[in-house]
Amino acid sequence: MTTVSAPAAAGAGPGRLYRVAGLDISLTGTGIATVGGTIRVPTKGRRNDSLAARRNRIKLIADVVVTEVGDVDLAAVEGPVSYSQPGGSTWDRAGLWWQVVDRLIGRDIPVAVIPPTCRAKYATGSGAARKAAVLEAAQRRYGAILDSDDEADALILRAMGLHFLGQPLTDVPAGHGVALVGCRWPDLGAGVA
Image (cartoon, rainbow, N blue to C red; front, side):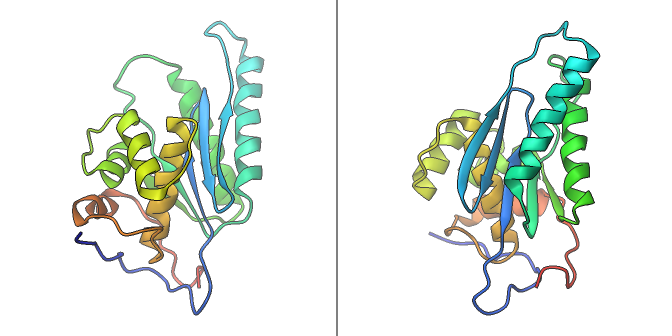
């Protein structure tokens, strides 16, 4: 198996392991992966919910996410899907994404934005892979027992963040690792050392 080397990033120093969270932000099932494992935050809403109900749902999800993330060196967040695709609650999804990202940045947590195609490519070798293939790949490569594709996505995002920082969870084929190039990584400077 050919492996890809990590992009240049600040060193962790001797014996220090990075704390990275992977976040698959969703209105129906947000996946969160941290050093403690993976969880899914399920919520339900209706198209005709009041603005107050929609706001409360978004706030609840964001509250849980930042609590579960805790204090980390990097949050690897799946980027928003293309809003040219109709369907779903576009404004609510965008509001939730920004609510989470704003809170992370407000806590001085660097945020990496990972396009969905890069997440799929890192997991499977194909940027067009469906969620079921990503789930299967995450279980196989990391030996994880995952209850949902939301958790699998979050685990892959966390693995990508660790790989970027030079501490990959495991070796990945070079064709998978090139997915790191298509992501928006924060400039960590001396902030993560």
